[in-house]
Image (cartoon, rainbow, N blue to C red; front, side, top):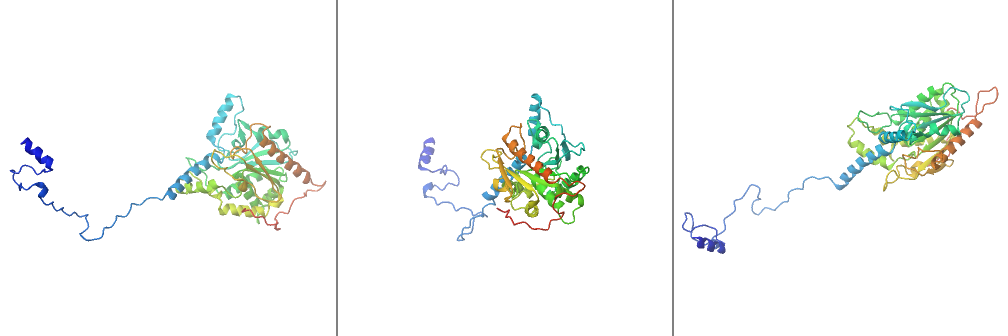
Amino acid sequence: MEGYLCSKWRKGDFSGDPSSPGDTGIPSRQRPLPTPTPTITDPPPGSPVTEPPPPPSWSRGAIAGLIAGIISLGLLALCLGAPRLRNRRRRRRGAHRGIELDDDPGEGIGFRVLHGGDGSSTEIADIILVHGLNGHRTRTWTKDGRCWPRDFLPHTLPGARIMAFGYDSTVMRWRGASHNSIGRHASMLLSDLQNMRGDNPDRPIIFVGHSLGGIVIKDALCKANAAGASLRDTKIFNSTYGIIFLGTPHRGSGYARLGWAGAAITHFWRGMNIKLVQTLRHDSDILDRVNTDFLRRSHHFKICSFAEELPVMAFFPPIVSVGSAFIGLPFEIQETIWASHRDICRFADEEDVGYRRLVRWITEFVAEATSSRVPEEGSTSTTQPPLIDTTEPESVDIAG
């Protein structure tokens, strides 16, 4: 029997024992092939064969755009301002070295006087600093525990009152971020500044704005000079002599466009302020409106713009390009600082080249403002422009 099965295996016949029931005794190689039983999925004979539709899938462009948007949104949150986590580490390192720690805890909303503010009539000017996205009114200007408006600038301008304005510019916060727009922050700047200047509302003002803070300053000055503005607002406009912009994206930032895409995907999360990110896009209507309104009034001020020379991270372009950091006005002072967008506004010592460039123009603006606005004896009038300007300066193309 074993030999019989082996011979059948060599011949390829696996039909079994020929004496078994159901065996026809015909060799398997001569038997006809069984007819396959048709199934429900098989098409009927003679019908054309159709391919099933491919499963739906995301295009590579959509996936790449989603990933780029999320990454850029994270870069905005980490790089455009002064991240609190990194500042905590710096303050801890400063404590070990005996450096004075930051004495401005909390969210830092409103004004904080860094020098002066005793109500003395000898204060020659108000120097007002406004931070940018994800910033803080004192930490934005602090490096290695040293806040240059508080620790360095009074050495050069002891007679000036130096103040820092804070507002909620956080993009993401787990417990919920402010949903104020640029216009609302600008209105709060004017309102708080009126209260700070009650003792001498005609004192010259020099503004210093970092990143988004420069946009807030421009919008606030436009509101102060608009038709229907209060007398106290117009005094702020008339008292403003100079503005210094540090990495301000006048024409927006490419990171904001991708970051807004990521923010729009997660708009349902109430802990994110999409309005601030959307304002910094190249095609932002709000940014275009602020630029147009400011250009009509820009000839009232001395303007100095600084651009960053370094990127925040290797292999990435700067947060604000040179073309966006400069307004392009014929009378604008244009300079650069060898630093990234985050460090263009902070300096470790008074010998820093960037600080020396910055303080030069602050000092010059203060000197010119105090010399050109001295009233005559027995008169309270000053050589200031009209409250509401109706003249149109020579048109300047800000779109580049």
